[in-house]
Length: 152
Ligand SMILES: [Zn+2]
Image (tube, rainbow, N blue to C red; front, side):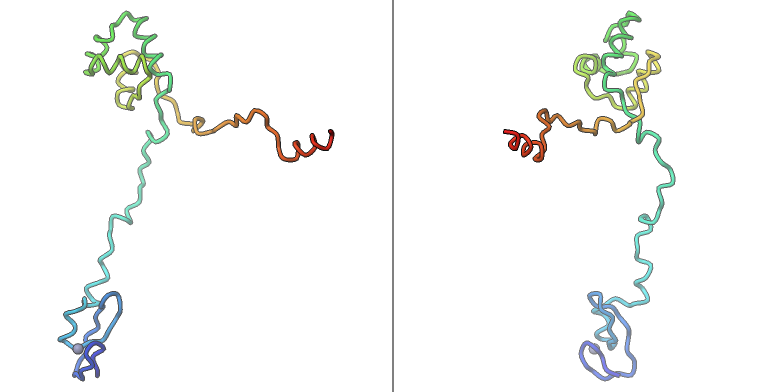
């Protein structure tokens, strides 16, 4: 039997993997590769863990007019921004930002506000914001243009 690596004739060969190639080598050369027997179970188990639990928050979004809703409700209840901030253990500036500029509210905060003000700030994401309506005002196709030219 001959070693695939050095060509030496030996009594027994070892099957090893060297740079991804299976080779039958002598004992001396086998240390350059990894023994085939030790290879198999090296796959990453975590890649096979299925995501059985689907996060229900995935399609829940904070309404884009949440800031306005908060402000209206807060004012109707006669609560100051600072007071609401305290109830939420947030900074008054955060509340101010949300109400005035419609700053992004994270779900956790939105839920807290919902609970305190008893308003609904969340909606299911219908992905409607992703739909871009064509604002092409002249709306002429090449065919229309040709027709117009023909008419002249
Ligand atoms: Zn060898």
